[in-house]
Length: 175
Image 1 (cartoon, helix red, strand yellow):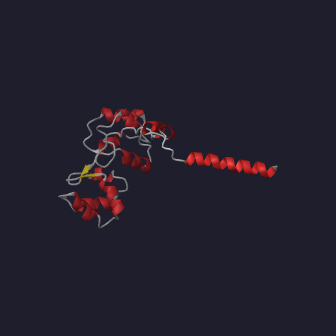
Image 2 (spheres, rainbow, N blue to C red):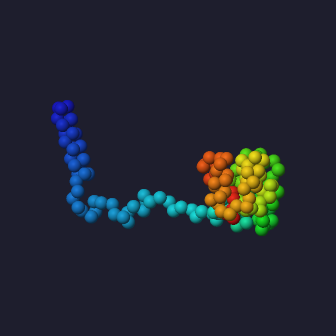
Image 3 (cartoon, helix red, strand yellow):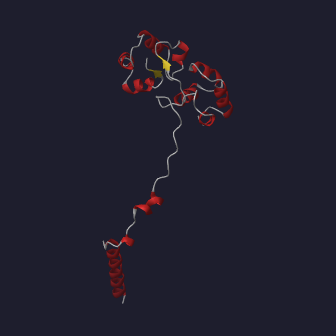
């Protein structure tokens, strides 16, 4: 009896599996393109306006976009907007809370930045670039005037690897 039950279950299982895998060509047996809506990924949210470097431009970003940056409150975002237009990042820096650590400030600048002109940027502007200290400040200024972004890559690339060069390039404007 136990053997006949086991054989019955096995036979039933094969029948079910055979029915699932058969290709009968019936229109009702397949999932059409119109039926896959539930499986489609959700629509993506539009990206905020960004500079060519991918950062938000402090002159065009909305209050909500600025306030969403870690380290920036709604009040600070409002102050950034009220002080527009920002000719340089120095004016934005003056609006940031003084209690931000260097790491927090660098994180803000990784998300919102107005690229600096390599030929006219002041020392203060260059030093706001995250990770740039007095040595790199000297190197940035030593090769002025820059005639192209390729020159920047060639000259500054002598001092940093390709990854760091690409990161630095996000903060500068092509002359």
